[in-house]
Amino acid sequence: LAYSFIIGAVIYPLYGHWVWGGGWLGDLAAIGLPAAADYAGSGVVHAVGGFVALAGAAIVGPRLGKFNVDGSSDTIIGHNVPYVVIGTFILFFGWFGFNINTGDSMGLNAINTLLAGATGSVVALYVQLVRTGKTDILMACNGALAGLVGITAGAAFVEPWSAVVIGAVAAPVMMGSVMLIEKVLKVDDPVSAVSVHGTTGLWGLLAVGIFANGNNGVTGLVAGDNLQIVSQIISMGVVLAWALGTGF
Image (cartoon, rainbow, N blue to C red):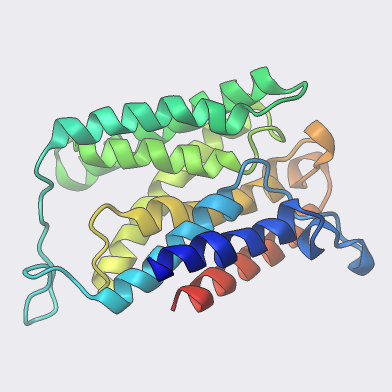
């Protein structure tokens, strides 16, 4: 209970204030940079939660039977795959409320959200098919969520073609992160929350600096501005250090 209170009362609100509430990441003019942009929270919501989760999982330790004596890991299958699929559909639907928000770009936000999530799902499905010779609905579900997390920061700042690219990149970023956390860091993340939300949240922040085309006043590399990506990288470093540090 105390841990939940600290997350909800301190960890989330402070970084959120730095980005959204007039804090220093939202005003980098003093060092000649535009404000760090995070429309609906790839960093503020997802990366914070993902990396606090990494700290928590590392401290709690793995489930019994996850890792073997030789350091290899076993896959522990979830008990109800249809529930996972239904839950993913519910999350996907809810994301439209999360990302659309208000203002003149509501239609664009909705289209970008749909395209990124759908692309992430399809790419994850086919990457897994190439890797293993089998399709994997659970990986497709996580691919959809990865695409949604990836577009959350830039839903109002990029064109639809960029949303497709962001979702397509988000899936392998998530899948590579899953392998890194399990095989290298030896942390047991039962639902890949660290990768889906944390690592892909970082990608979402970076993607704004690359693909923002001037929509809603944010311009990235594709539109000829090389300063926004610097602000995004600063925000990525801050959220990683903040969430992991306070999480531990």
